[in-house]
Length: 382
Length: 184
Image 1 (tube, one colour):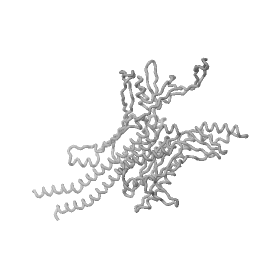
Image 2 (cartoon, helix red, strand yellow):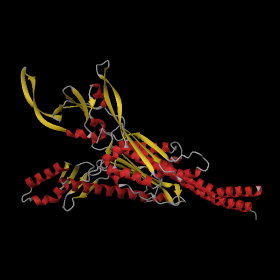
Image 3 (cartoon, chains in turn green, cyan):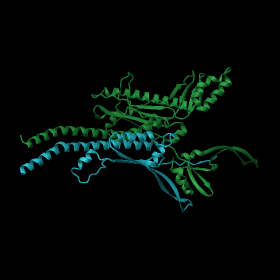
């Protein structure tokens, strides 16, 4: 054979192997791109759902999703955004999207709600309703409650903030900020119980008044309960796979520690997207996304005036922490029965570096209109 | 003579087609894979920072680890643009000052020097941002990839910067509700 024949033969063999390798690499690339695309779509849906968290709702009702209308609104926004992202809002593919999201968890200040997409009939078998909206079952609130470690008879219900509910062994309920709750329990025990000993409340005191112990106990309980509930419903979702030819198993993805820390501070939406659409070497699409209401807050600004030089500061910035609260009294005059009288009323004033703050503004623009220049704390949050 | 020259050229072309061309094509495909991998890492980092309003040391280290996993020497640039409003000397019709919006930029060195203090007695801390700020991250490779090196066979001017990702966005909710508050 001539040299050219050998070369042609090697080119032909190389082309055959190369075609397979190129195809495999293309597949890898497409799977990676698809995974990223699905993760971004899920993140967008979570962010839009978290945007429905309103601070006024938290101020008025104490939590973001205490009303069913708010829960429905958040979940509708989540599924709508997901459907729009997949371009499936008016097609039957919408049902598939709902099947690929086994769980959506709304973590509120006083508990968490699970919305899952498997419905069971009265005999315990899976019943997948024809209407996708009916599949979405929202459970009642799951609270974070546990007995006080080491102390018998006290049950503590935790929240994301420092408020607790304590149920004593006499079935009395104390609610409020944890230090105040402990003080009330202690005062009641001293008043009611004869032979009461201060050591009886040592464990409760250690839990409620020690910052480190309280935060550690509360966070461990919250993470453990959310994890177990989500894992349970993700595993339940495996029954859907029984109805189809291809079987795949949902598993709980590992949520990073940093993401847990985020959701422990504010109301949060966490959701999962799992399925076989981007299958590669038996690895299935398995992503989660969470978005919280960390930034669903207003900023407050105040102006200080020193020798005619006006500066505005931000209360939420690090320098805003130097604002102090002072309680005092003020005498006011009023007319009653055509007589001038005066009375003393309590007042609350806020001071920054000894200067009284007369008014709070809600935007930088309002402060600038008053002629105040920004203090460095407005733009430098170090 | 011509026959020998033809044979040499054929052998050279054959070796190129057999060995270099396939490797070059595979390497360029690998570059595409690495590009999408770095894209997803940067997107996740920026989206998390924008949603949470802070850059944590853990998030930054995770980004570095993921960029490292692509087996490339990459440069990461971060720019945090912090918004503030300053009054002008002119007054409007209502007697209030007019104002302009400005931005102060912080680069990666300033951000990292704050997040990782040089004193051993201080812990690492997060870089905080507020609503309306802008965050951008740029990742670019500094060393040429195998695909770009092999493509120098064809191109006279080699471009080593073949992987480039730039992603950014506004932090949090850019709208603010108006709610007056006063001492009582």
